[in-house]
Image (tube, rainbow, N blue to C red; front, side, top):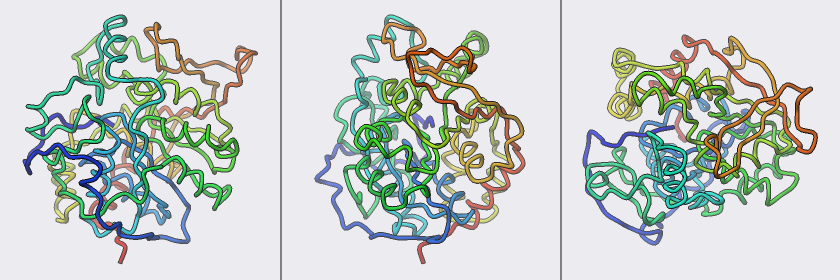
Length: 378
């Protein structure tokens, strides 16, 4: 999910390294130990609490959060995750830091690709380093992947640290511990999940399934009209952040794969909704009111409601998908869809469920409840 380039609160700026964030970890925790098990992998930011709060509100057992590199570096995104849990007394849920870099993509390579195929409105972590923007509260881009920008942590600087710096290995461990029980949610790039797939050939098949925010089909025409924001929300940046990882994951043998793409682009919340949510005042409703960008869809929360409540899906279909991993292609990082009769015979492609639309009333009601009455570790 995209994040703001500015924030409403400045808490100071510092360039710090891994050694500066090693504080006591809050410990293993289970808020809903009897619930459906899920691992949430995302490029977390200050407005992202609704995702794990919704899962907890539905009684799901959140085994842990994983940070990835997409909007910002995995270190910074992981610090957001730690802070978001801490403000709501949820630090018993562990956070595992993901890989610093995508499998192949780097800021330099992304810049070269844009020179060949055209600029991206939103460049995420690959945007040039901007000291001024970071001083004003933007999450880090380019430069050193281990630095943390305190100014972007408007939810507060966490007092706990990561449960591990090897997210992929931890995911494999959890899936082996609970075979057939763990759902994997991906709201950012696929790097960590791809590493788990390559690390353990049984990983994907031993999960209960994969839910993905991304995988847009036929959105190129939507990028030709309207303002740049219209082009931005149709670029499928999470896949472009690590196309090779996306290919590995979307061809792995998960029991089922669900892409929540077009559906998520259609869901927005406005200031009236956020003010209504803030009628019940707590740290999460305040963060939602102060940090949510209402000009962007609520991509991740839409994906979460599909995962939590399949009945919220109004329209869906199935087809086979491939990911374009040709660096010199204008669709590098995008998916290509096939009906069964036309699937390339020399590739092992997967059939996926593609969600066209969801019940927006159910989505907003669920998000509101989760923010207003959050579960806690106590």
